[in-house]
Structure formats: C-alpha cells, structure tokens
Length: 347
Image (cartoon, rainbow, N blue to C red; front, top):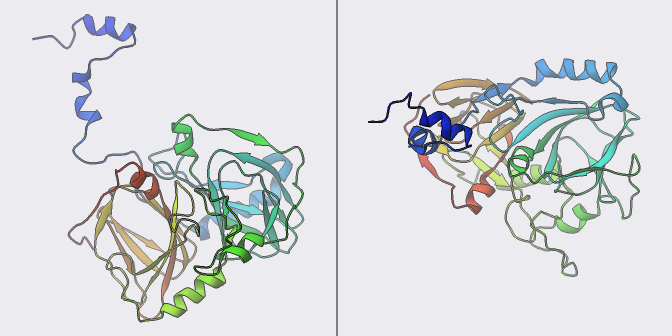
C-alpha cells in the first residue's frame, strides 16, 4: 500500500499533476454541494447606508453606487448564489451613469422612485416601481435621473457564470451618455401585446427584444387571473416573463418570474438544482430553507442556493404577498442538468 507520505506525491505536484484517488469523493458528490447558503438581506437595514453613500460619494468617484448582496459562503469573488449576482443600486436627481457594455446579461427590477430612465442601444426606457428592464449581454446602457428623490433598483447579472467560463469583456462608451436613436419605450410598445408581435423584424435573438416589462401589465395579469387559477402547490400563482420570439426565458442564462401567494399560503416543500434570488415586492412571509426559517417583509431580498429544500409561506391571513424572482434554470435546462423533487415539509 502506498503511504500518504510517499515522496512521489510531492514530485507529481511539482509537475502540476494530482492523484485523482485523493479527490474522487470531492469531485463526484452524491448530491449537489456548493458554497452558497440560504440568506436574507433586509431592505430597511440597507437603504439608509445606500442613501448615505449617495450623499457622500459622487458618481464620478463610484460610477455605480451599488451595495452588492454577497452570500456569506461566496465572498471572493463576490456572488449571491452560484452563477448569479444581485445588488441594490441608487441614482440621485440630475445624475447620469456612464454608458458601457459587458458580456454579462443584466436586468434591473425597480424598487422605488420615478423620473429616471435607462438607455439601451439607443432606446430610452422609462423606469417605474415594479418594472423589469432588460440589458442583454454586450448592449450599450446608461442611466439618467430627471425626477425627484432617490431612484433605487435591484441589479441582477450573470457575471459569476461569464467569468467562470472565461468569456467576460467590458468596454466604456466614448460618451458618458449615448444618443437616442429611436422613440422612447419603442420595444415595450411593439412587443407587449400578448401573442401579437411585429412580423417585419427578423432579429430573433436568444434574448428578449423587450426593453421594459411594465408593472402595470403584471398587475393586470394577476387581476385577470383573480381567484380562478389554482396555481402551483409549491409557488402559488406564478407567472414567467417570456421572450416573445421564443416563448422561453427573457435571457438565455436567467429566468424571471413573479408570484402571488394568497393569504395563509404555505407551499409544499421542494428542492431544485437551480439557484434563485427573490425580491419581495409587497407582503410579509417566510421561507423555510433547509430547516432554517427566514422571515421577510416588503422589499427584502433572499437567496436560495441550488438543491436547498424550500417552503414559501405567506404569514398574512388577509393580504397577498407578491414576490419577484430570478434563477439560473435556463442554463441547467440547456445542459440537461435541471432536476427537482418534492420533499417532506419542514415548517
């Protein structure tokens, strides 16, 4: 039998090789195992610090004033869950954010404020609370706030995946703000009419052509469904934002959904290989994640790593809870690695 102190191990290490038999159990695990842990960030605690730095730090100094939501298990490089990142960004009245582009796909979900817009490849897109605005990879984008008070949104990117693949590029625009080249909110007005989409455009990319999925349309969708839809036993009445060309996810690496949890809802326990990040639009509730209960309130954010056993609960007996979420499910499905299963309830 070879001794663990065999000098041959040192020799092969110097040759940049390694014995598989020493790592086999770590490389091929019986179940998914990652560094991220279930975690909750309280918006009420973060907001004062975000506004403090908005006052103390100019845009020229910071360029993007963002509080990164760093999972305790993934501090370096910072990420929120496997392949996904979340941050909370603020822009103040009269400010602009430098135009740039990057390989990573991104979107922003507006939390509070009015009077700002983002410009994506020449299209100026209005920002309102509850709106979902897309910035597919390698599209020029910048922000401008013409209203009053802070404008705050949830930033989402897939840069942990892009960087892990060694495929990241970044470039600054030649001007701080790009020029508009088309009417404001054109893509939203063209593509958000149910199953009717422009037939003259053949640029059917894997990313959705819609610049903004307005909250007003989301609200109307929930009202139309009303109490007639039974919904999912695990997720309540859950809707997915889709690419009008394909009917699939809005971005090739991230699926975005919004769900209504009726008063008193207690979802069945489930675990999925996909990791997800959740933003509470309104309501109070809890998630039981691997036996740990995380109580959430309006505007909080919580992360659920892949293969975490989860139960969603609306703790109110009278009011709906509305929760936005995004996940890396499209990547896992494309690779044939998506899996989910029901488990025994924890809470």
